[in-house]
Amino acid sequence: MFIHPRCTGTIQSLERTAWQDNNPDLAMISKKEGVEHFSDGVRYITEYLFPVTAGSKTVVRGFGF
Image (cartoon, rainbow, N blue to C red; front, side, top):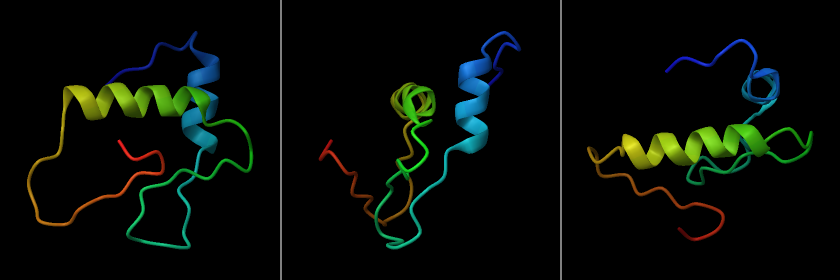
């Protein structure tokens, strides 16, 4: 995946977004800094285009989808 250099908001969001560490079974992004909007969008399209289907571990997402 390539991000164009002019997409400064997306680049900043991808650099500063972090996962929550309190529960390894949940795939939840920390919303403390308020910079996760662009990285959420990148994550949604990436998961849609390239779904991970191998493995037996179930991932629970924060919004139930």
